[in-house]
Length: 406
Ligand SMILES: *[C@@H]1O[C@H](CO)[C@@H](O)[C@H](O)[C@H]1NC(C)=O
Ligand SMILES: *[C@@H]1O[C@H](CO)[C@@H](O)[C@H](O)[C@H]1NC(C)=O
Ligand SMILES: *[C@@H]1O[C@H](CO)[C@@H](O)[C@H](O)[C@H]1NC(C)=O
Ligand SMILES: *[C@@H]1O[C@H](CO)[C@@H](O)[C@H](O)[C@H]1NC(C)=O
Ligand SMILES: *[C@@H]1O[C@H](CO)[C@@H](O)[C@H](O)[C@H]1NC(C)=O
Image (cartoon, rainbow, N blue to C red; front, side, top):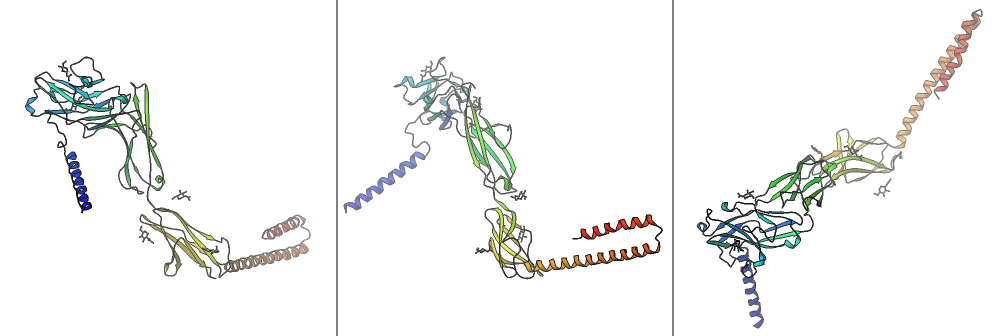
């Protein structure tokens, strides 16, 4: 009995916790105060030490008519605790003062309810929660429900690399690298290995903060697969006397249809009819491809097998094979590969030697005929030594021709 009650109370606690979580996330319901001032500014801002931070800010009074533009207005920034009566040293900026504790400046026009502030020469110790206050006598109020959390880091934030679209060959994609720009007066310089001297573009975001961006549109091919994009953001700090750099990398994984498809035979060289050879189909493809083997026949190519390897018995006739490699992006066909047995090759060798023999015999016959004619001429006209000598000299030349046939 006791244990059942315990379980129930645990359930109730959980339900209460859930309720309070809902309350916290519900805009102002969590803020127990009822201030007369609200600001519109980012809730969390990150900045780099040695640089500045532009805080985009607008305010509104509640009720609205409490604030009168015509009256003299002071803007005040308070750190850590809104209870500045108790901790007067927390008032780190008052626009009516000439010397302030923190290097801040309200650049917005307070009469236009613009409290945009430039916070310069930041150090990591400036990391804190800040409250904005308006003094528009007799109206005075602190935006207690809109604290601003500022985090000042010692090292540069890493840029972001983004790629629009599908990473497939022939696809045109836009690759961008962007870096947060808390201090638009001295923005970071972005560089990458996709192009020399890219054009740095400073864009305003919807919350009025800024981003520095470079981008490039490329048409993908299989050669981009595995390429690592590296982008660097270099921030000037301490009035540009130094820089802080951060780098981001992203490796492209590009899908492509099969490429470099070829077939290899093992063993290579001649084999006798009836023995087996292994055919291997090779290809590059992403995602991995499937393989099919085709044999050429009178009726065209017919599929004989699937898989990267194909074992085939060599027949006495010659056969042609090829493989087709297919993935989701397409297919590629290897060139035909011709399989013939050693016997097949031997018979063609015989034919070749037979043809050679016949030619040789013909040459010998012609030579003999020439020789006989020549001897006859010698006997009939012995009184012509010049022409005779010329013909005798021709003889070894003819034999050279015959010899060259071997
Ligand atoms: C800001 O300065 C004005 C004028 O000096 C002063 O009246 C006011 O009290 C100051 N505000 C705070 C919060 O210190
Ligand atoms: C507020 O003032 C800043 C100047 O510091 C200006 O850049 C910005 O556009 C103004 N915002 C609005 C909403 O007028
Ligand atoms: C793959 O094929 C391409 C042409 O499509 C060629 O330029 C490249 O040299 C080939 N690579 C290999 C390893 O054969
Ligand atoms: C072919 O491959 C099989 C195994 O896949 C192997 O047992 C055989 O010896 C190979 N034959 C030749 C001729 O390479
Ligand atoms: C190869 O792709 C072409 C279209 O690109 C298609 O017509 C053909 O049927 C495909 N072949 C195989 C074997 O999948």
